[in-house]
Length: 117
Length: 108
Image (cartoon, rainbow over all chains, first blue to last red; front, side):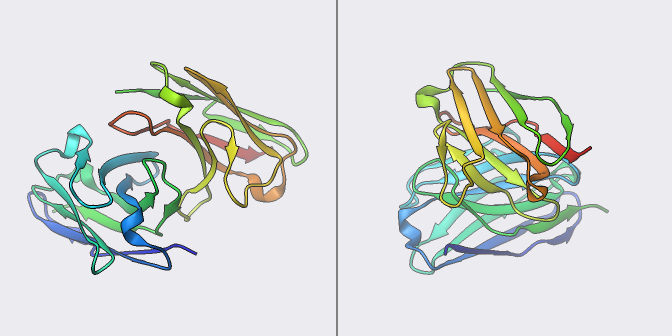
């Protein structure tokens, strides 16, 4: 069974930076497109970014373009999200999620990011 | 951007009843690349349906998806106690990928 485990969440001040990681196991990581999806407290799901299997293509939702960078290391079976210039509205649980194409078939349990002074 | 509108926001039903959830897209979803996810409190979402009507591995056959173009429906034929949760539709045809706002199915 696909295993995705996020880490790196925490409390950060507005304007600060944070790097999330996602460790993958029990599947062929480089067969999957990988995403970050977030969920603000008590709210719905919001797609953040996706990266191609080989890391050569990245797409972002408009609200994070220029601030967030998705990346992956297939040798380490890991996904990352570098988050800069964080805003209070970025506060959310961030899920690592992936699938063979753009369809998300597997999800991690999430890591909470809180942006507050 | 394709905007997905789910209705109703909340559905109050009893176990054994039929649930019908709607997801309407602001423009046609190519190839009917529309998925449904179930999310229980404190848990990650779980894929139920892909390609508008294909049940994911492990999805009970009381869950069915239908529709095409801009109008999609998730039907739960007879609600079981474990089905009460929030359900999201998502299109994965066009970037940005988008989710609907969710429908909460609660016990009446």
